Image (cartoon, rainbow, N blue to C red; front, side, top):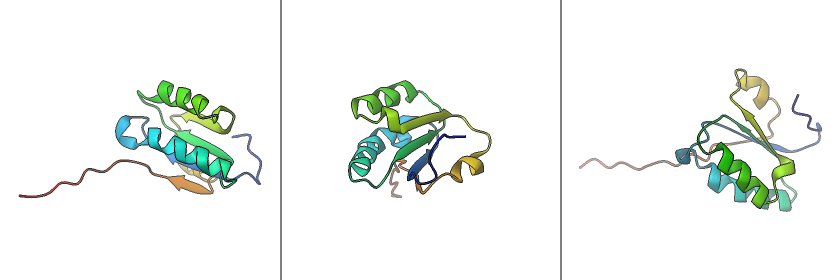
Length: 98
């Protein structure tokens, strides 16, 4: 379904394409992983306000041919079956009790 070769190394991230999920920081890392020959494709599952900007960023980083934006998916387990790696780049806030 994803039109990827079984020998391709695939990194998948699932979540809302919004600022707190950290995808803007993930994309340069994926570019570096691809340059090192460690990852062939990035698959982003989810939708949100940053989708268009992330698609533009993939172009700027030279990832357009290697990044798939799947949008919202109802069967996440099926998509994850194609993953070699799962990325959860969400930013966490540290809260301290006073």
